[in-house]
Image (tube, rainbow, N blue to C red; front, side, top):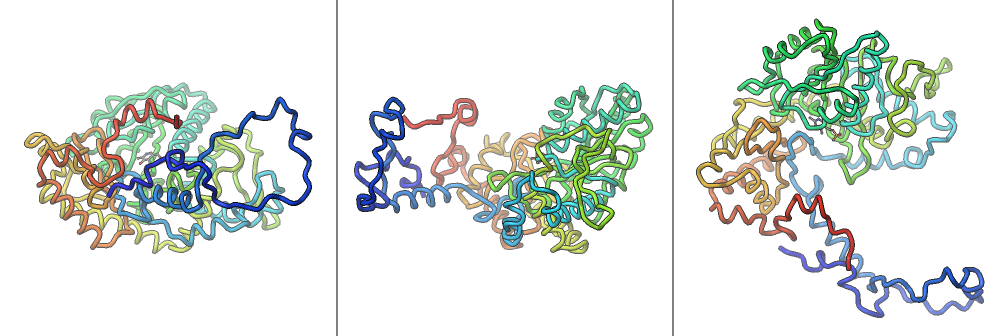
Length: 483
Ligand SMILES: *Cc1c(COP(=O)(O)O)cnc(C)c1O
């Protein structure tokens, strides 16, 4: 259903003389404007703003808000992103004045409640990670990666070791090599096996005394837990290297396995994925990192610490610290939500999150594999990757066609064309907050789509305000003004 009202711009809706509120002329004597603003600074005529009634404006924005899909309106199985439902209570608690209206320059004595919460988040994340120390400062998962890689650089520099390279599997998220490059390392790609796991032989060939870090996502981006992780860590450590765990997929192992226990020296969390923070437009994210005791001295400042008198303070006195990676102590709003989420669930609840996320993904996988190829395995963790390769070969139907057509059925599209090692990839992550009825409806829609004529699919979506924008042009030459 195309919505004309919503897609017209306010300038197009404008009619001369329309007003939202019309007040009678002011009967309080005022000084003429020329007396307090110099004549040369005054515009000759008012700016050409749209002229609208209040209902024009309200309907415009409310209708616009319905053109997009969100977790609150639709099932959103965007692989790798963990678009789970965010409990509204967390939002209400985090927006309380004591959290939302504090200023970073306030004296610490007036921030004790917030600092107590941040300290508790540090402790809970350290426990979940199975690692000793946490910095809450990075503003996103990707910045957490970069921060940890700067911590690794400081660690090796301090030990007088000259290492140059970071090894990264070919299944990795694009942020991994980007973060490594930004932190000054050169990167080397490690191959995956046909089963979608790290190729141990290739890893061993590429490991050397130059290796600083091996970065790994586990469960990996194919939704598989790489059971070789202890052996991988042993080999990396044998060369004096460090193991970095990309924690974006913690939703699959929360409360079940701890990265520190399976060999990781450092990791990041994505609270906007695992701990129900809003993504993107919902507010800033965070990318806390956890590290071993050996790496702790290099963490960014400040760290929240307990005082002798039972209070809390920000510790800046850490001479080996890499310094700050962002202003003040990080995006605390999303960390307050993390606190609410974890305290509400408790350890048993956190484990059930992972169990249900994995159960939901396996249920959907078992329904989809009857009509779509799932190249890497019959079982998955919290997500899996299907492939439209066979459909493309036989009928010219691509992963993009399927993803676009799903919008017509009221489902947000899965992640497509990632990971790069699967052709025509559809990466599906249902999360634990969806019911069996929703998963069944999605499976039925997908099955129907796979049997639809290619022509219909190439033109999809048919029900949205915009069908298929030129994605490259939309990103490179966006039209940013109305004229
Ligand atoms: C989301 C994601 C990241 C990056 O996290 P951001 O918080 O979006 O910066 C890194 N690795 C993987 C595997 C991810 O899914």
